[in-house]
Structures are given as structure tokens and as C-alpha cells.
Image 1 (cartoon, rainbow, N blue to C red):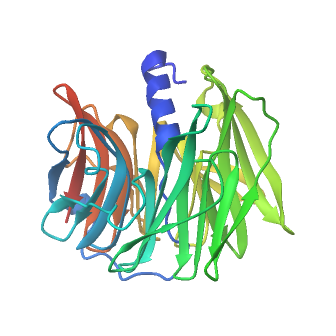
Image 2: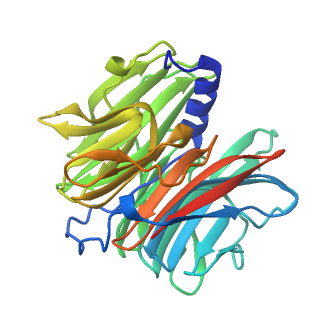
Length: 369
């Protein structure tokens, strides 16, 4: 997709990021206290997440209620089934959580988001076989109430890739097949966004957010074994999903061909942003404009305040916006890493990613304070 990088490698990274990543942030526009110091001046440390007898520990999402209560979730492969796909930081160390107690089964976790230490939501899916031995995905949605994990049942056969928590009473989720899940007043309502597609297409909604009292969603449709991808941006109006924008991305696409990303977020200035290939984009006057251009894929954005926005992505990129300019955070460098998530408050920042270490893949958490 980028001429200055070998296409096979970029294609692999693009698909990996597109299929697995998802990260959402609250639309609360209340300005938090100013940071005690800029992330540009932080001292950084690195923690490694991974267990013996696992050859992949790929953390895909990170969120915290405070610097002493941070969760990271993702995918594991190996012999330690049941541990290693959900980790928790208590202010001192990272430990894996056996969240499956009292639950029917574990899931492949894709995203975590919440509003407090007793309102944490994680979504994903569980592979299952039907009577014809066809492999299907069962939605997996769990909530932590401060004491235990509770599994929520939804009647579909599609994986869930994104979650957006509004408050303790309302949550949105989205994923395979264009399905949007809305939890309110202790019940789930399901809706389906439809686009032109064939039986070999994969249509996934990666983000859904509330912005100015309206609901927006963004996703992609890709034909099996093809690198060509259709991007869609939707708004829900009068109970129906209206297509607001679309683009087609092919292997030869350049920066000018891509006008929005595959994820959504609302910043502290109550602006709607998308991010993905070639940077961050802002929704203005019913169209997308470049907000922060890059040469790479932005995989996660966290707007801690109007003057403290962090963005991370593939090839180890990590940027900080202080209200006037963007600066790459080079105080700590990790080679050959794909960053998948970032979370921060006015005291500390956590950046998660994964890389090959020897003959295994493990996740690393950069911790700045």
C-alpha cells in the first residue's frame, strides 16, 4: 500500500491490524486536570507479557480506570489455554486474569473499554462448530462489575470486534456481518448495517460512537483472498443507517487516495476523528479532512485532553500532540514492534504492542510517568 515499503510485508501488517485491532475512548468532553508533566518528558519502562508454553501473546487493546487499574486483552496461542489473553496492572505489576470463572467458556478477546473500575466491558468471539462441522464465531461479551465477570448473551453467530461504553447504563458493540449491538436499560438490541457484498466478502464494523447525540459507525468490506478493501462511514438517522462516505483501497493506493480510517474516536474538543492508514482525519462540514498525516498506519488514538493526545501505530511509531504541534516520542525505542493500543491519564501513559522475541511473539507494555 506504500511504495517506500515492501508490499508483501505491508500487506501482512495491514491485514493483521485491520482484522484484530480495535480501541475506543469515551465521548465525555469534560476537560480533565492538566498533566503533571508532558509525556515528552516521561521516564519510560517496558514490561513483557507472556506465559511459558505460549508461542503468541498478542495484546490488541488497553484501557484503565486509573494508573493503578489497567486492563489489556488480546489473543494467545499455545498450550496454556485459559490464561494469558487478559492481563491486569495494579500499579505494581502485570498479572494474567482467569476471567472464565463462573462463565460457560472463554473467548478470543478483541477490545476492552469502560467508564470506571466497576464498569469494564470486553468483547470478542468464540469459535464453534455447527452440526455440519462449519466453523462459526459466537459473540463474546463480558462485563466486570468490580467483583466478578458476567457473560452477556446475544443471539447472533458473528464475532464482536469493538466496544464503546457510554456510561453504566449504556454500551455499544460491533463486529462481523455489519451487526451493531446496543445495550440499554438492561437489554440488548441488535441492528444490521447492510452493504453490497458477495458470499465471499468479509464485512466488519470496527467502531461505533456517539457524537453530538448521534450514532456513527465505520467499517470495511473485503473479498476473501483479495487486498482490495471498501471503507464505509455511516450515521444512524431515524432508525436507519445512512452511508456518509466510502472509499476503495487497493494495494497501489497512495496517501491521497485514502481520506479516512477504519476506527472512530471523539476527542475532548467534541470533534469526531477517524484513524488508520496514513494518519488521523477529522469530520468537518460533512466531509473528512486530514488532521495528522503519517506514512504509516495509526492503530490507536487516546485524547486525554485538548492539549494531550497520543497516537501509536505500526513500525513502532508513537506521537504526542500538545495543543500546538506533534512530536514523535523517541525517548524509548523498541525495534520491530506493532503498537496496538494506548491509554493515558494526566499522570501516566501505557502503550501496548507485540513483536517477535526469539521464536515466539510476546506483547510489550511501555509505561511512561
